[in-house]
Length: 273
Image (cartoon, rainbow, N blue to C red; front, top):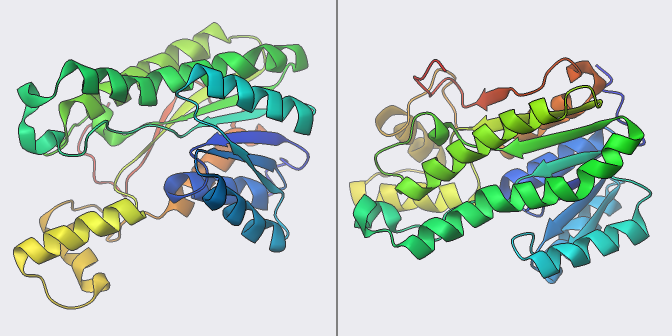
């Protein structure tokens, strides 16, 4: 199915690795000119150059979207390099401290709650607010936020600030969709379950060491699904799974979809809302 995205321009925050890279590549494969925003210039330049050699229209923009001054610099770079931005994908987000789950809910200080919300919610609000006015003028646009199934069903092992921030992002996405009624702009949320990024590979490796699992990673993946996070598909998701969902939501085929939360979790979530 041709998604009809050739000629569109997108910005993907946190776009140089993991889920962000899966989104960048899926959009670029559909003919979207993609600007991948990241903080590491060496990594970003190397990543975009690799994709350009494959014929994909991807460029790197250095910046930290959680910092207002840096975000302004990102906007200036894009103004010089792109006629417009049609698609905004807010992928930046995460925990201030990965050890929060081991310290318990009451052990997470205010500073880390604020930092997690700044990364996950405020950055998405700030980036969206920056590009929506031009989308309104063009009468077309897409805002796609990357959430998590932890917003609806936070695992006990996940620090409390993470699920709470993702739930706030879900609410903000829904309210934005209604604020944009009649403008030609849609706003949606994609909520991944476990996705096989470098971070998850490391996490599974730690579990394997602690539990004495033997064999190669394919066996660890199977045991992770059997013992830790079972799902209905029988594999862990890949970044490309998220990228393909984002590409669909960015397309004209999804023009009747707004304010939605699309779970991409292999059926692991038991929540019905």
